Image (cartoon, rainbow, N blue to C red; front, side):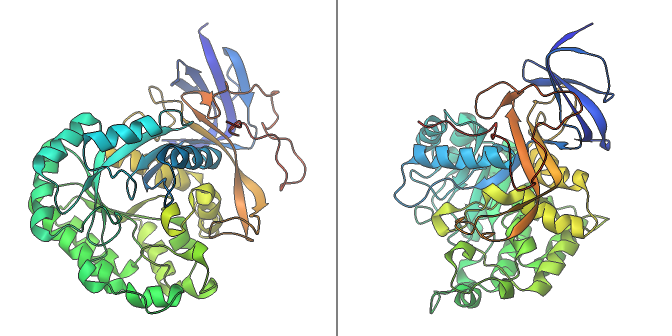
Amino acid sequence: MPQFDTVVRSRQVAAPAGVAPASVCISAGSVVSVGDYRACVTAQQDVDLGDTALLPGGVDIDAAVQEPAQDLSEGYAATAAAAARAGVTTLVVSGPSVPPLTDEAGLHTHATAAADTRVRVAFLGAVTGTTTCADLAELRAAGAVGFHCSLSDGAGPASRPVDDARLRKAMLELTALDAPLVAHSEDAAELSEPQRPGLSAMLEARPARAERRGVERLVAAARMAGTRVLVSPFSAAECAAVLAAARAMGAPVSAQTCPHYLCLPAEQVPDDSPAHTCRPPLRNGHNRSALWSALLDPHDPVVTQVGSGHRPGTGARTVSWTLPALWTAARRRGCDLADLARWTSEAPSRFLGLDRRGRIAPGCDADLVAFDPAAEQAVPAADSGPYAGRTLAGRVTGTWVGGRGASGCALPAAPRNRSAVDGGDPLHTAPDPTAVPPR
């Protein structure tokens, strides 16, 4: 009988074939087999989550880590710790940041700053108004899993917007490098400076037509170059028709939205709240409903995935609540845990070509999340994110990377037929296995 490092059992394992009871056997950081829930196996640790679900670790594309004037390593430490507690096992980082991810030296600086984090970190090289083909090739060779550009100010002050000529040239090079492009689509020509503080002024300054014009530019370039393009963050649902038409003609374009666009209509949040400041801005309830329709399209959804949209530099501190916020809204629409796993893990991994991530299957990395879908939790009123004071459904109770706790400890053993988290009050948790010890 084979000896495994760990077996994790759950009555709700979100595997590619669907959600069902299963045991997941792990050795050397990888999933070796997925079998019967009650399978008799020999392992150093046997973890039974009971009714707590086991999901693939989240792959969060297009996250930023740095606040203004914050040391880069501190930004990585704080963001990675929040990501680990939230069930994100791979952070895919873009700008804005200092230094920007515009060359090999910048990428190496980021890699060094992220070296001690508790989650996996990958990087999107920056495509700016001055980027050359040699820059792209250098970044790809240095390990960039993809690239990021902005048609306005989404990449930060150090990264100039990309014009059409530069965009087409970069896309042709990225196609040759077999590298995907993540694009902030708001068109600079359609934006203006807000005339006063607040969300309503931001909506006036950054209208939906700015996204539409940018999406049209991206589609035109992608059809010519054949580059895989992900529009992120996607908030203006009226642009879904443009993407759908492009996909019907064979253009490899899709979109990623964020839980706050799916959960928080502009008319239901305080106009003067810095925690609800994001780019693009939150839009109205009608737009939110249409965004859900684009995500849930049963034929060929243009919105294929959901990322945190974490941007601490602009006030969008969102990574901590991605799964509960998304689950709160999704289950009301009849969605299940398989949808959650597809949007946050499988689809982003597939977009980036990370074949060993995003699935609970033999040969994949043992990046796992214990998620209690029946729990409820009150977000503290003092939380700096957009969900402060709200009650959310679902709770992440453990996050493990490569078969080990994201805090650096081995997966904890648990008695058979009991959850890894103590029962009782759903707003009380046992000691968090992903807690980062004081430095």
